[in-house]
Length: 248
Image 1 (tube, rainbow, N blue to C red):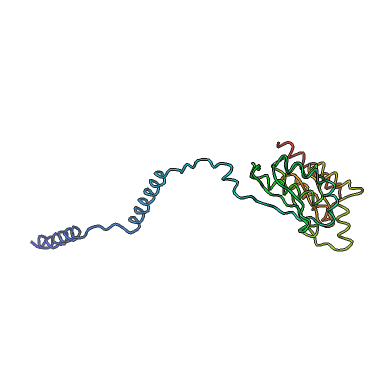
Image 2: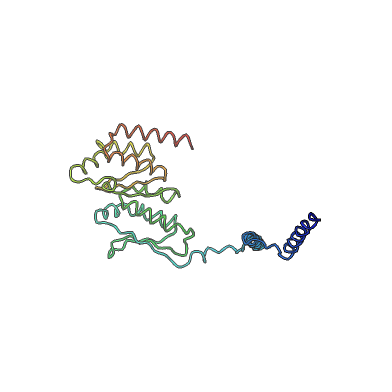
């Protein structure tokens, strides 16, 4: 009898626990709800992206693309007047006949003015002509500067000797002498190996060539400024030049 009395409360407790569990409903955690929302949002975004199509515009005519006439002015320093006057016909001819631009020398502003006109077809013609005239004024030969008109992958780079190393007095002149070499031998060697053209104008150095070749010439000149002997610089240039030749 005692055993039956002891079992009845346990049965009642189990029944109560069952009713309590049925009364409480399981609530989903906020993290799972947030993940579902993010996934739904991603699905909706992807559907929107797929639905949008690229706009197709008709090609623009050359007249509309050209727009109003543009003009560039290239200032000419006093020491380049005589060379400009002597070579004016060589400069004038390719700009007018090949690039179909208008060019003149303004005596008041002392600058070469280049302007587009109705006959100008190429958009980049004005930039090419400005680079061509600028290269000649910096000191390059007309034949070398003409390559800027004929080829697209040629650039001009200018830097100062003091940008590499702050030198003064005799140290600066010796650095410039190392770059030039005896009778210009070092400069010509760097030009021939790197296939560039170099102009030394006081402390300014101007380099004309392709991007990779300018980089090689600039590295060689910087090493000379920093004090490396020319023989070591020659060897380094030849090694780099041979590697680039093998690549291409």
